[in-house]
Amino acid sequence: MKVPNLKTFLRTAVAAASLVALAFLIGCSGNDANPKAGRVRDTSVPVTVATAVSKSMPVQVTAIGTVEAYSTVMIKSQVNGQITGMHFTEGQDVKKGDLLFTIDPRPFQADLDKQNATLAKDEAQLANARAQAKRWEELKNQGVAAKEQADAIITTAQAMEATVNADRAAVEASRVQMQYTKIYAPISGRTGNVTVKEGNLVTANGGVSLVTINQISPIFATFTVPEQSLTDIKRYMAAGRLTVTAQPQGQPPVEGKLTFIDNSVDASTGTIKLKATFENTNRVLWPGQFVTSVLTLSTQRDATVIPSQAVLNGQQGTYVYIAKKDNTVESRNVVVQRTNGLETVIASGVQPGESVIADGQLRLVPGAKIEVKGAYVPPSSAPPGASTDPTTVAARDVPLANVPPAMTAPDPSSSAANTTSPSANKNARTPGKQEAER
Image (cartoon, rainbow, N blue to C red; front, side, top):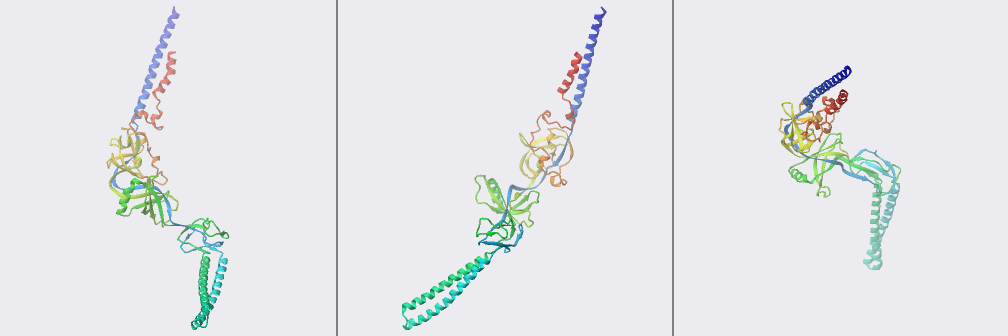
C-alpha cells in the first residue's frame, strides 16, 4: 500500500511544479513586453525643421530647352579644283573675312588670261571697224559709195562693239571664278570638323560641306511651354522685357531676354515655341546643349514659402508635418501654389513662422514625439559634396500618416526592431509548456 501512495504524491508534486513554472514564464514574458512596447511609444524621432517664411517669390515658367547657334553657315566650294591650302585649324574661332581654304588657281588664271587676250583682240578689231565705218559714212554722204555697202560696214562695226562687250563679261566671269579659289569666312564664329583636307578634289556646290561655322556669341536657347501660359507671357511681354535664365548641367545659369514667340501653337503637343537670346561672352552655352530654361514673368510679394522636400503626397493630397511646441507633430493638408526648384509657395495650410518637418518624415505619425536635430540647411548652403537632390533626403510620395502605428515600417536601429513580437513569445513558451505538461 505504500507504493501507490508514493506514486500519487509524485504525480501531485510534478503537477504543482509545472503550474508554478508556467505561471512564472507567463509573468516574465508579460514584464518583458510591456516596457519595450512603452519604450517604442516614447521613442523620439530625430528630425530637422524649417520655418515657413514670407518673402517675394518670382512667378516663373520652367522648361527644358536646346541651345541653337545664332547663325550657321556650311562652307562649300563654288568651283571645281584641288585644295592646296587650309589656313585654320579645326575648332578655331575665325572672324568674318578670314581666309579659310585655297583651291588651285592655275586653271582659272589661265582662263582669265585667255579671256583678256580675246578681249584685246576684239577691241583692236573694233577700233578698225569704227574707222572703216567712219570713212564709209563720209563717202556715202558725198554720194561716192553705194549706200548698201556703207551700211554693211557700219553694221560690222556695231557687231564688233557687241563682241567686245561680251568679251568684257567673259573676263569678269573668269575673274569671279578666280576669286572663288580663295574661300573666306562669311561670318565670325567657331569652326567645326573639317571634312575635306588639303590635297583633296572638290566640286562646285558639292553635297558635303568643307566645314561648318557656328556663331555662338550671341546665341539662342529654344524651349516650349504649355499653351495655357501663352496669355500671361504675351501680357507681361507687352509690359516690358522678360528675363530668361538658361542653366546647363553643372554650370552656372546665364541670363538673357525673351526675343521670339512662335506664330502658332503646335496642335500635336499643345505647346508654343519660345526663343531667348544670350550674349554668351563667357561661352557657357554651346549649340545643341540641353539647358533648364526659366522664364520669369513677375514677382509675387508676401508669399508663404517652405522647402520643397517638406511637402509630401498622400491619398488625400499634399500635406506637411507641423512641429508643435510640445515636441510632437501634426499632419496638415496644404494647397501648393507652385514650386520653384527647392522652394514651394503654399497657398493655404501653413502660416509664416510655423515650423515644418524638412527631414525625417518617413517615420512620423500624427502626435509622434520628435527630437529636433537642427535647422534645415538648403543644398546651396550645404558643405561641398553634399547631396542636392531632395528625393535623397525625405520620401516624396508616402501615404498620409493617419494609419495605425502598427502599419509603419520599424527602424532597425530602434529598440522596437529588437523587440520580440507576442506571437514569437507565445511560440517560444510552447516547448516549455509542453515540457511542464509532460
